[in-house]
Image: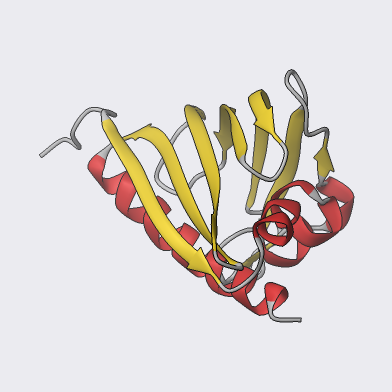
Length: 153
């Protein structure tokens, strides 16, 4: 049976035990991105990360498999909306996703909400097939576990 068409939107809401400014910074600071981005089993070499957090700016990075460094997944995003400490919106092109041929194009919306000293992040990304949505949800969950550890320092 063929996978369903790419119509699913991934929505993840997560509370981080850190102020909104710190969580936002973790998404736009190249040094921090290199420490947490990517699911467990993948790393992001610092020299692959570039961020220009403004409308028309970009976020570029490469996820690399820890087990097989030849397995690389470049991510190139362009920001279409940026409100410091509140909102990052853009489009993404991602290559090298296991089970996916070519370049995947999608949108991403990250909302950072103050929750009394904590941060409620609402992430929207897509469109995905059902299979890709599930894989991506697992990947974000794994990444956010690494982000929790970084924010605890």
